[in-house]
Length: 161
Image (cartoon, rainbow, N blue to C red; front, side, top):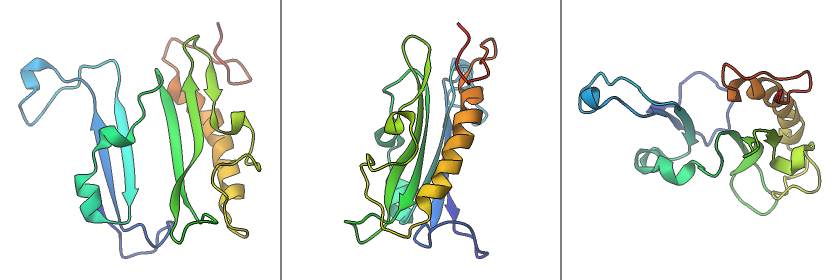
């Protein structure tokens, strides 16, 4: 659990704390020991930023993580929504591996921020242009992260079949 540092950080002022969780399958021999050995074929790393440390302490990660795909990357940002007095979480990037093995950017059908957005953001908010750049970076680098070491991507970032 981390408290907000006293030095300035590039985050909305409401964000006061964060937590990082890592989990996977552990070996039976080390299950109840302090130094556990990870033994799974998967690893989940979750970062949660919050406005309320008490909520963060009680937050159930299983309620926040989506297990709807075989593997995926999701990125959220706090935005000023038109119909909300406080900033709200906004899913701006999601890369999923489909059952056939293809990698698909599922937010906005893979297109840039458009009027199709489900969260109307206040005019003048700098989030959409910044997120477009982050989406491009995630679409390039995220595809490398999501692939197993024996898989290969073509120049377009798609899996070589």
